[in-house]
Amino acid sequence: MSGHPAGSKEYWHEKYIDQNTPWDLNGPHPAMTMVLNEVLKTTKHRPLKIYVPGMGNGHDAAFFAKHGHQTIGGDISEKAVKNAKERYQDITNLDLKVLNAIQDKNPGNLDLIFDRAMFCALPASVEDQYLESCTQKLNKNGIFASIIFTKVDRENGPPWAISVDNFTLKMQKRGFKLFFQKNVPVTYKTSFIIQESIVIYTRA
Image (cartoon, rainbow, N blue to C red):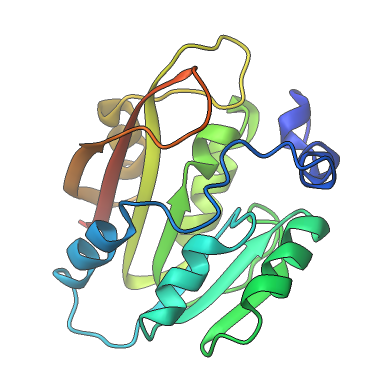
């Protein structure tokens, strides 16, 4: 990765080493139940095979696994993965590992990728590579769900904002259609996140 330092492994690893992680809620995002319920409306397949890229300390990945789904949580930071394993390694159906969500080809044949604002944490130089990598990991009926930031009061990121319309255009180019969208209360412990939104896409 190149350009903004947020595109590097070292940038994120240092955040976890220094415990400078204001996005960490010490538990799953409050909207996770809504996300899972909406996803399950689109498929009869159970359990789902799920990948959570940029999982951080693993809370959202653990949520899916606790609900019986085969879940892989990955992060580029070894420290983040270590934190996740210390807390969640005993959960059945949960595989926690160091993964580069852009460069690594695995995991594959996925039913669902859940992106909790990872897209918004990436510099523009690698956004399309990330979405292409996600698309290739999903099976023919795969679902892409995300919580994006639609309003951010910060110029140089991360995170960076993207509107639902613009994100949907990116997904449409990759053969997806918007199935569900809902604005949700801001959860971050910062003043610069103004609006969060759930977006769920199915194959068109």
